[in-house]
Length: 253
Image (cartoon, helix red, strand yellow):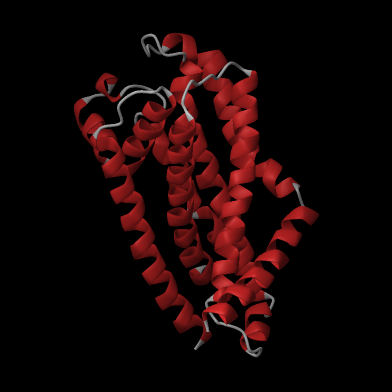
């Protein structure tokens, strides 16, 4: 049964990846907004923001990476919605394949597509001055955090794609996720914010994730932020996965 599931998922993931390769503008579109934010804040607002001895591009990049992922998962919801509307799901259900492999194919495609977008953003960041002396283990930890964050948001996108009534609704859910980093430590230190805003910024998931990535890339002690970040990502992932499977079963029943 496991072999059956893995094989079905691999075939369907290949199908989804081929669709992306045929329309690379999806990757470009996903990366355009984060790159625009990166350039805007570094070259326009960066000089007015005090981040101490840390170059602003180094301070800013972790938040931009999270925005890239939040922007990219909207396409997962969109592609899933289109598959439902065009009857492809019903066609798959009539075939002898593992039912959950259809969803996992979209999830794995999201992971690959988002990491391509992240690579594009990283190249731009390097061009404009980002540098890090972090070692291999620190970079692997950063990749692991980004992968976990991507999986958590992707399963939220699956719920939206299965529940949406229109194409706009399938992708619009990602807008709050894109702007959540703006009320966090991603762009400015939280101690510069007024009381209620500061409390929210310091206790929402993005801040702990951004701080963990930033400290890893700057070769600093991560401390408790890493465990808080993992708890947020893991909790969102588990809840979103369970809800997505419930919605999926109801949709195809």
